[in-house]
Length: 150
Image (cartoon, rainbow, N blue to C red):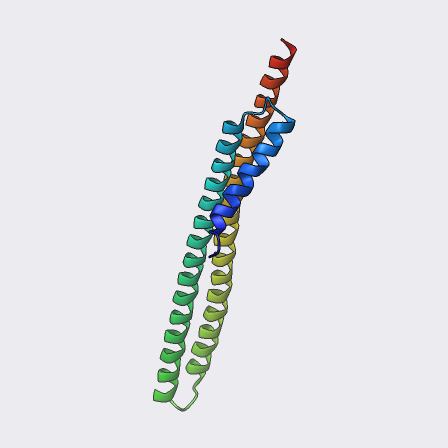
C-alpha cells in the first residue's frame, strides 16, 4: 500500500525541521511550521485564482465564438436572400468585415487584459506572503541572536 503523497510531504517537513533543530537549537519549530502552513495556504489561494481565470477566459472565448458564428450565419442568410451583388451589398459586406476585425482585436485585448490583471493579483498575493515570511524569519533570527547574547 502506497503512502499518501501529502503525508510524505508532511513527514519530510518534520524530518527537515528536526534536522535543522539539532543544528540550530534556538529555532522556533512552531513558527517555522506555521510559516510553511501559511505558504501552502497562499499557494492554494493562488491556484484557485488561476482556475477562476481559466474559467473566465473559457467563457469569454465561448461567447466570442458564439457571436462570430451568429454574425456569419446572419451574413450568409442575407447574402443568400439577395444573390445579386449590389453596391450597397458590397459596402455592407465591407463594413461587416471591418466590424469583425475590430471585434477580434477587442476580444484579444479583453483576453490580454484579463490575463494581465490576474497575473498581477496572483503575483501580489505570493509576493505579500513571501515578504511576510521573510520578515518573520528575520525577526525570529533577531530574537534568537538577542537571546544568545544575554
